[in-house]
Structure formats: structure tokens, C-alpha cells
Length: 281
Image (cartoon, rainbow, N blue to C red):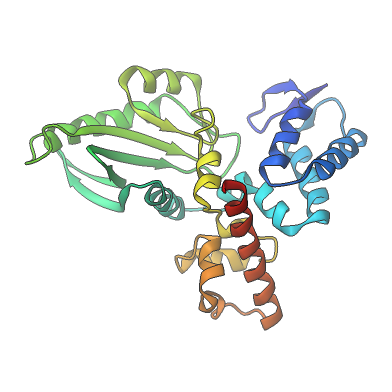
């Protein structure tokens, strides 16, 4: 049976992929079996993967808001828009938890011109210029023009960086991070010029979705207990992560919600964080 992806491409329905995504959210075998079997009544030729996802999410939510919140990670990242700034902060914080030092929105002098860099990250003898490409739609892919452009900017910076005191023996490298995917030509070019590329599921087992779970950094847009308007209000106030809600009770004080709902929101945020710690332990 053919299903239609967000990009418009067709592929064979793969139940194993659905099962893996449910398992990644922390669902147990019985829950996974039940949802996978029940999806049989929904499937038809040409159904969209988004519809399959939405129905699986609805059924998973009957079992647990916590599991449902973790399952909708990809959609939650898309909701960090409409601007790319929360995504830049998200990437910077993720890198810090992976052992890097990082800064966002940095103006850096190149050999020819100055550049505003989304994220500058350093670790050991490595220094990275990182461009974050945020998209609001799952089907949008970053094509080869993106790494071509970033590589040209990086080469201008590399000339300047290499001349700085203490940088002669450092590894300088460009890096592009996107919340969706790259085209094959973009991946091919990145490999050829040694430009690091990070997308939703690339590199294999080291993609954005894998790193987010590894460092326990789910965004507040995962939460089922908050409405879209409330999430956007928090994002405007630089509240991006579930851990911020679970660690600081005052974060929700400016929202126009009652005390009972605040408790539910904090409990769900805490459950998502705790689930990650258990899965990573």
C-alpha cells in the first residue's frame, strides 16, 4: 500500500517505522501492538503519512499525555516558528549539553566582510560556524544552494580565524543544522567539502531527533496541556524547554491560566524530562 509523505513523494507503508517511532516515545510493547493493529482500519491507498501520524498521536494520547508529547517531537520543533530564533537557541543549548561552549547571534569578522553567525560552538581543538535553517513545514528540504552559500561564508571566516593567535592548530569547520531534511545533492556536496550537516534523521543514529532525546531537551511545544497561544507567549519570553517549566515554578506566573492547569503543565513537563532520563539511563 502506497502512502504519501509530507514532501509529496510516495513510498510503501512501513509498519515497522510506526512501531519504531512509538517505541522512541517510550511506549511499551502492548501499547505499540494495540496502536499498530488498530491502524489497519484507517489505512487506504494514498493516505498521507501526516494523517497516519495524527491518528497514532490521538490513540497514544489515550494512553498517556507524556508519551503523546514525546511522540510529537517533530511537529513540536516545527512549532518553534514562525521565526528561526527559538530554533537557534534550541540548537545552542543542545550543543552545550553535548559538551560544547556556544553563543548565538554573533557578529564575526571574516577576511573580506563581517558575518552574523547563528551559533558559534567550540569543543576541544574544534571551532564551528553554525547556520540554522528552520522550516515551518515537514516537506521542505534544504537543497544544495544552502551548503554552497554556507561554505562560501565559512571559507571567508576560516581565513581570518586561522590567522588569530592560538588558532593555527585548531580545526575550523562549517556546520548547517535543519529541523527537516537535506536533498541528496546537498548531502553529497557537504561530504565533498567536509561541511557538517545535521538534519532530523541525518547522520544515521546521530540526527537531531536522536540528540534531542540523548540530552533530555524536549521543547515546550511538545506539551499537550498548553494551547498554541500559551506556547507562543512562553517562546516570546525565551522559555523554550520543558526542563525550564519543571525546574522553575515562576515561569508560568505570567500566563492567564488557573492554578490547577499550571500544576498539570508542570507535571507533564516533568514527566517528559523524567521519561528521557529513564530511557537514557
